[in-house]
Length: 516
Image 1 (tube, rainbow, N blue to C red):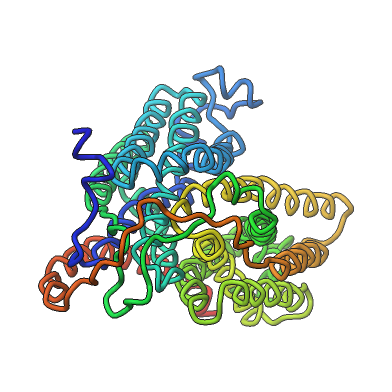
Image 2 (cartoon, helix red, strand yellow):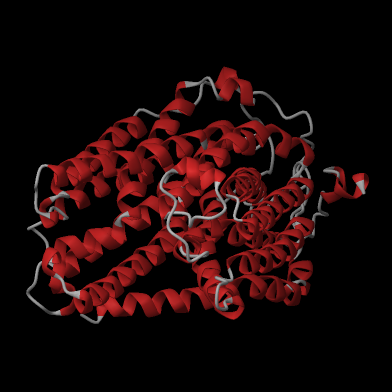
């Protein structure tokens, strides 16, 4: 088994079809992307026992006789993304050393095992076990599973790095789009009087994800040193690179770290409040009535909530599409130019969104664009790192950079929540709360723009030759590529069909808002 999982065993022959690798990456990212969709479990878990709510976090962690509060459960989100960043940084070098097949299987074991352990915590009503399983063990699977496919695709697409990373990270954004409606239907199947069906749904998802992630991991291959893409004989996989220890100490690394931190911080907090934000700002305008949010009756609250869910669905679609669009565009205009564009445009968008200024269609369009640039900023970072430091150790470098994501995952929501709560405490009307928040987030993007413009090429004396590099190998022949079309169709269908299924449900939610 050790030999089968070794890096040497997965070096592909020259005629291997590189378009078989992206479906493997998508299979893993679609599964771990369910981290974004775990909120589907919060409300069912908050009344799982039908008992009074726990009065404090301490009682939630120690008692099995009170229902967990949503505020107790959302700590799993924090654990997801903090542990993701830490594990990506710690295991990035190991991923590059052992190869994507072994790393993908370890990711599957941690992510699926973490969900299963979390399900056991739900069954036993032990919050600490739910945190440990889903949040900590699952977070380790997230970190390893996030960088493994990205690193692999960059090696296979040295001529189109933005496209490669966009394909992979698009799957991470789409994971919740598939997993959330699937979890909803599973809970409905297993629900009964006195039983929310959460732990059963989590176990089924863990099993399905284990199959998909294992198939993806076993399907990974690596190009031989010197391999060239078809029709691109001047582009060679491998070559010179900047070692991890040197790369992580360069100004370029820390400037890109700041760009990611500021772009994510300026987006993740406000996107997390998307539904209440649009309801509070526009009130009855969402369903054609001139009434403020504070004056809603129960029927109006339900109508506004449906419109809010449509808004969330719409920006989710743009978040996913932006990962592919902006990253692919960076192949044409360059990574630095792309980041300058999205950071400047994002700051301008927050100005257009100031309460009292835009009509609802403009507001929706602005935040759809912001969401697309949030996703694009994620997707193009690995390609930018490969441009700056080479592809040899890009997975390890990317892993360390993801600590910026972990930091932003705490900083962004805290900043937005603090400013919102402070404004409400001052007695400011809900529809007027968000103006200073938008200005502060525009300021963060302006700082990110400055950092992006300061990024320069890495000094040539920091680069070293890849000792594994050999003479360029011939690209795969057209005959071999055409012979793989049947396998290519099957591999892509396996990931695109679930993605289309989830997209259909998201579009249905978005139509509720657009119909107004």
